[in-house]
Amino acid sequence: MIDDKRKKFKKRVYFKVILITLILVITLVISFIFVREMKKESNDLVAERIAAQTILVRNESMAGLSKEYEKAIPYIEKSQKIHFVVAPGDVVTIISLLEKIAQDTGSKQTIQLKNVEPAPAISALGVSVNKMNYTITLDGSYNSFLEYVKKVAELIYYIKIDSINMSGPVDVEKNSQTVIGASFYIKK
Image 1: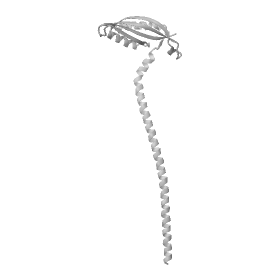
Image 2: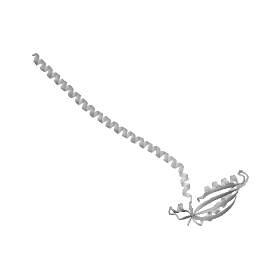
Image 3: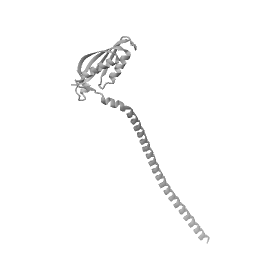
Image 4: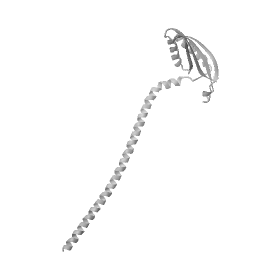
């Protein structure tokens, strides 16, 4: 009987050990699966967060570009109205406009057309043009010179100022002589 009780006891112990082992194995398997799923979810969340941050950065960049573009719109519209290359008949128009600017600013102006030369940089773009070089001699005050240059910059024709040489007093009220070397591009 003691043997029988022992055997039963051993069977129960074995049964309980096997049951506990089975429970542990099942728990470990479930834990392993759970941890793997959690890692997968975590990686997915990290990927989503990175994607969201990337989108946020892009949106902020786009907003900044949009604001910069809005600031540039007046300059873009103005540049679309500028004639960078003029027709040969517009040379007289440009000289007339320069004469009017000199008159409006209270300056005495002399324009000397110098030479016409090919403009290879622009010709390489497929536009056949010449560069018209000329000299403007202005007699007037420093303020009238500044006003003259501002008004020239506002013209719808692109006039490139190559050099400015001022002689005489650089005074707001007193007259001085200013020699401006300039050019513009003419279609051939």
